Length: 407
Image 1 (cartoon, rainbow, N blue to C red):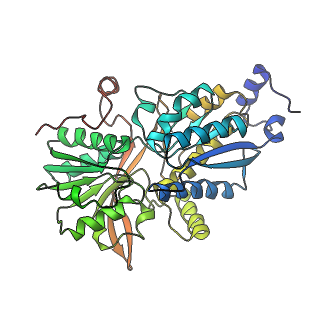
Image 2: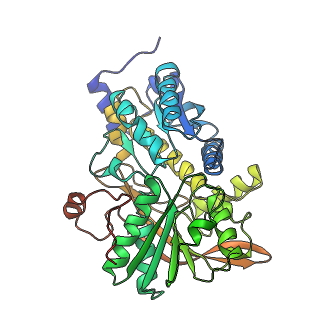
Image 3: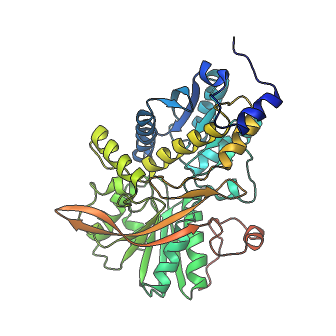
């Protein structure tokens, strides 16, 4: 039988961080649930998610804040219904203390209310904007980025440093695509650029040529494909003889995809909260361990879950290892500030969304292999970019038709 702390004893334990961990923290494992995708067009990222958190837990000898860790992995199948079923199983059957995932915005939106009702802390890569904006979930925290968070610096760089004046946007026809392109469009237009066209491609499309044929004349094409789809898009784009430069966000030039691209990807500018060439201690350690264990280089999805593991560990340390008080646990998670993660320093805003670096990279060929070379770092990027927060939240969420085309 596990003895529970009274409120006064618990608070005293949190304040006295130098004291030994309470008995409750050492008596039972911390149960972490992972919602990921192992099949379908988004599986490439989902598999890297599992590998990323596994790498972190292995480094910690499967123990956080003095407690053993049980990792329970659930495959959502990449559907809202699957995500809800698996979330219910993790909470009601497996009694997890915290959920990592899911991957896709449509999955996250399907389970948000249920997870909040259950008061289960959740850290997700899913970038759905309103989770930390107009409809915040008090038990949600995001250490990766919103859909638009990496696109806003990309638009700034495209307009101000690459001097592009006109752009055509092409992305998959779901929330992540709309929100990526919405963020890009707003910043690009505010910097003097013009978006000529937005093209929406059904998720899982095998043949992109009918959509590529719609692009027409412009200075740059901004693509927002995710999972393994960027590889297919770039190959078909080149096969059609397209010469207009291509840029993209965090999933467009993911490090883990570089082995699958051909020379058609050389020169593509992409922006991401993570870059494999970041030369800090955490990233060097992470890349070395990941590469050794999986024979592949890590990308955004793997790094994101490794960072999520760091946030969970830091939150547990703040509570003395206690997860019974869910309000105290989520408050501790949201109060985490880290300086040495694979993506650099991070902290969280009042809505539970990360503030951190965004890296502008260029795909190059070195020693016969494609690599991302960081050309600029935007530091301490907020989900609201440089806009006034109240003004930003008064605008509609980015959607298929918002912002509207001005041309």
